[in-house]
Image (cartoon, rainbow, N blue to C red):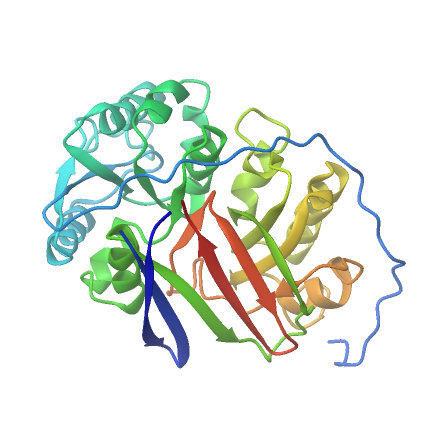
Amino acid sequence: MLNCTMATLMVLGCSFALCSCSDDDDNAESTQESYTPPVAPVEDYTCVRPDFLREGDMIAIVSPSYVTDEETMTKGMDAIRAMGFVPVLAPNVNKAYLEKYAGTPAERTADLEWAYANSDIKAIMTTRGGYGAIQLLPLLNADVLSANPKWLIGYSDITTLLSFSVSAKVMAIHGTMLSSLKSTGGTSYDDTLLKSLLTGLLPHYEWQSSAHANRPGTATGMLVGGNMSTFTPLIGSDYDFTSHGDIILFVEEIGENARNIDRMMYSLRLHGVLSRVKGILVGDFANCGDEFRIGSIEEMLSKYTLSDMDIPIAYGFRAGHAGVNMPLVIGAQATLDVTANAASLTFQLP
């Protein structure tokens, strides 16, 4: 086991500790009855923790989804250098296919497998999301990943590959990509947290969430999740990271109508995923619709969609598409502790 010491950062008014390791009103009530989710098949397993990095280590730059412009590539790689690492472009990263994709599915797959198999590469950062990562799943060789566990970093459409990594029993990081580093230069609060995590400082998060109604309680399980419209299609497949026995589910979204978010939550119910969920971590829902005039997606989840779930639910975690992306270790055991207006998240890594 790793020996741990604690340090603390203040981020946007919230306390974040680092562990070093070698139109309805507010009184509206739901008419839903208590919900008992269907039970789905369970697979219990433990994910491998990739090795932590040292300054000067090489990070592969890959584009599994949409193509990335030259300015983003240049400024993003400069930011990685400012963080103390050496960016290395994958062989096909500058290719384009059908106007949008960063190469054919085969080329994008080859870049990922090259990054995992190359012993000089210590971590893998994606350039951006968009769409296209799902096209790689039938082509990727999980044995290459399992034999060469490395930190894969990304969010948005890259949630697909985070799910693939966990299904191959390797932890991954839901966190910033090159497209964000272009603007921050690698010096933002979440960039600092990402570098700290990559070099062995585990985040311990504490935050206030008084704007929405938390569901108090304590939950422990494997942390999985990310962009809802990206991981929901994987439910029941060989690449489904929600198939673990006890999970804490993280959710975030951008630009979706409220009905689509409600539909995806009901998909989780109908597939039995919620029978495995011990707690829910609600991230940012950026630029999403409010066609039911409830006030926000968070209000919809709290008062209606998730109102019958008798598990801890924490709102207000800063991760997703709203400009701040606190890194999360996907596939790690975690504890979510929730009170009426605050919450904390702690990771337990081998």
